[in-house]
Image (cartoon, rainbow, N blue to C red; front, side, top):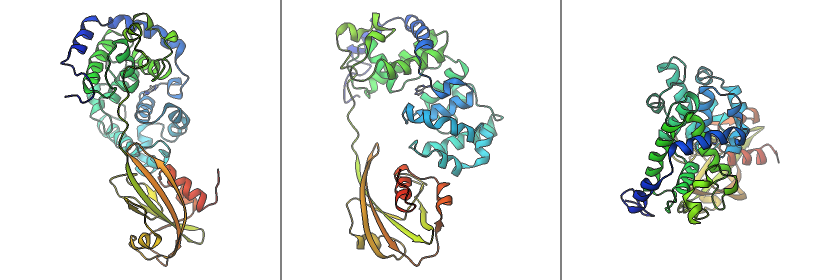
Length: 365
Ligand code: ADE
């Protein structure tokens, strides 16, 4: 049952089903609109199934502009699934830096292994086979199957939800389960009615990102405006309603810079939880801020002369992380003592990389 608005059993969705715009009209409008209005994005310049798979995985949770910057260097490094398998998981995680949600990098490597072992090195071309790959769910399988192989598979992401909630005038929160279910059914109808399902799907995303934006949409530029129910009802600015912002857990991360000549001590984070498996300065995590003595006591080796240096804060989707940087000395020899070159090849979160660049190597930009 929905917390925030109507569900499929209610009148809102039934009346929408009855009076909705024909899927074939929407599909053909979008197919005519897309070629002249799409953004110039690297994965659109040359399409192969592997490039589509990698870009769609990156785009799941990362902004288009950030993916656009990283895409070609990443593809040059891993031009096909075999190259990715040979490079190894750590190399993929390191190259993923700045894209966030690093678990996706490990899943992408695992998907490359499955493509090599189970699909003769070629990206599979059906929704079912794509969904069996690590890291690929209903949305990503639909986007790859439609964009790379022209299959009539539906896709629903945040942009698509906004477009459909508006053309059907559904006054619900954008994470309302009833609205999302309605969107999947609607997207199925659109993909089935399309001449080019990949173009219709990409146009829905593109329209949501560039025209039918949150807040104030640019209805004058919209190919669907003539029949948009939200526009007709004058509710295009407020539909769908925003979802509740995530509750963030507060985490204090006390990190310690320890030097030996031109080397610093680095450690790998646990395989589970925040920044799983990435490298960092030895750190102590807690729910509240700790004094230097308590930080020293939280380590599993001895440090001396621990001195607080600076603090800064980073907001992640589900966490607010307060970094507290310390410097100290240790006699411990075991562990990974890395120079700048070695550290640069290890996967790290973006804030940890910047912190180390600044404090350990004196890089300021
Ligand atoms: N978001 C997810 N997939 C996308 C694509 N192919 N183009 C633009 N934005 C997207």
